[in-house]
Image 1: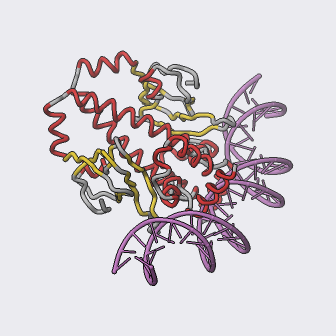
Image 2: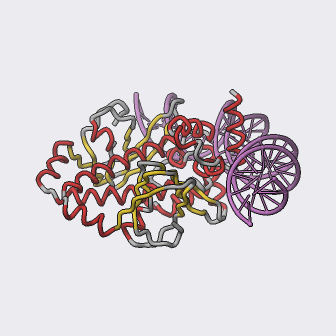
Image 3: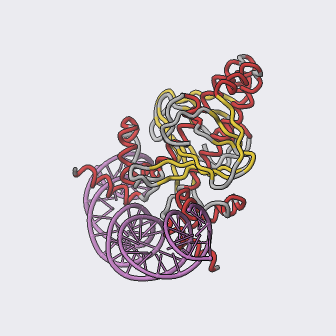
Length: 154
Length: 154
DNA sequence: GAAAAAAAATGAACTAGTTTAAGACTTTTA
DNA sequence: TAAAAGTCTTAAACTAGTTCATTTTTTTTC
């Protein structure tokens, strides 16, 4: 997926690993999420509104995805109204955990954020490059390298 | 509201201004939101799960709130199933805008975040203390003071 | 309306994180 | 399998933001 595209599908990942990122005004990438097996990915905003996305998505390894179109997504709610409740609760929970995570993150140093990522997502940390992890944590690759050297020396 | 309480209500603000914050391990406050007229506030996680909250809420000026209990909130969905759809879409939109905002924020300096806050919420910025704004932006009050002096000198 | 408490300003010394540049190591491509 | 391209490491100089200590200003309280 490229910035400028209109998102036609939301994707469920059955195999592989992807990164979702934007480019800032200087052209530097900022990674907003990594997605592996059993995650959903895509740009929900663009999917819902049919406006062009600002995100890029790239697979970091060979991956297999299932996509649902907007029409089928709407059909789901039409045909099975109970899904409204299911998704209402799902989005509510996502919102809660997202708010919690981002409030928590603001008080941590880069090193603490790295350690937290590593312990929380041990299955992701060794499938991505250090550079991409730096882009996610919000620091330069050089500083990421220093942190890793320092943490591993212990 | 105090950390440790079990959240009994979600509040709609009809008048006034409140701050929602946590204390980090060092006891330093981190403000997660300011809420003024026409906003909702509370701790949705604690409200939903009946687990004790980690948040504090304090009014920063005399305020008037309307509260809805969990029982009445559930009743709303039971009695008027169309609210499921309404809230599903509401939470989905909140999630989208929250993700967008926090991805955007990570690439900005403290000064840029201050200017953005000021232009986006001109009705809030002069109703809160600099210290609280520093706690929201994620910097020390001293540095906040320096930024404001610098920006105003222009 | 004076005293006390809290918030804001200022400055000096410090630390976390960036920038730039160069070399070593790995992966991809032809 | 050699060349090219990308990733990782290291280091020195720098900048953004912190810490601590002190003074001034504003707000709250009695």
